[in-house]
Image (cartoon, rainbow, N blue to C red; front, top):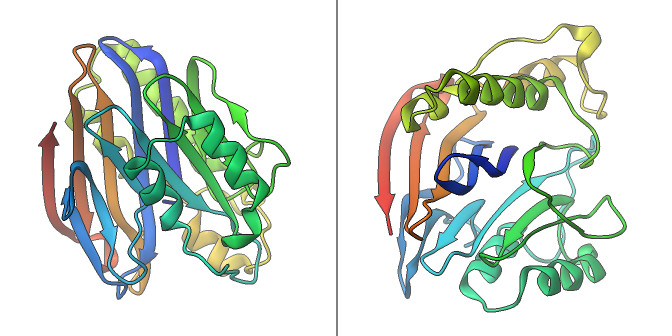
Amino acid sequence: MCLILLALDRVPQRPWLLLGNRDEFHARPTAAAAAWNGDPDVVGGRDLQAGGSWLAVNRNGRFAAVTNVRSGIPARGPRSRGDLVADFVRGGDAAASYAKSISSRREEYGPFNLIVSDGIAVWGVSSVKHDPWRFEPGIHTLSNGAPEVHWPKTQRLQAAFEASLKSGKATDAALLDLLGDTFQPLDADLPHTGVGLDLERLLAPVFIRGGHYGTRASTLAYARTDGTIVLDERRFGPAGMADGETSIEI
């Protein structure tokens, strides 16, 4: 995941809601969102190269999502960042305990920002922030920078989401459409993450259209007040070409 919006107690009849884009190399093998083999209560996409996930939910109310953190030179750890999501949604640790445990051994993974919830509380942990934190009710966004840093894409997504809520037209399709924003920020507004201006430009929009690297999936996930969970995923190929859509309710 490279862009996540979390809404806690801000959407009517939806205690929590996640919106996110997964940006990745198009050649990386990936499975579409579905119930997981061996863990049928868990739903989400799967990274078939490393075996983890970028966003997944469990029928029992647990959910998790992860982004990488961009710092110029790609960095990997002994374990895949996708394991952070998979291990949590399949496990039983409280969100606070898991976040604190991961914070203490963050060097096992490449740079990351992680959101986890056990259905009671939502916690964040980052490889570039010393302590984990609990998310308060509100609208929160994370991308590939430090949690406190807001880039043009996070600002645009949050503003568009808030406007959609105010308009009363926040249907599932309309919210997923927000993730298709290809607006190109001005060069002066771009972050400086050590990858060079051309790549900063490519990575700057909410939705990335690239031949070799770009947005692979746009995901909306949320819980209803009755406890059911919905996950909608739109998939894309090179240059942003539509490549399928899945809607699941558990």
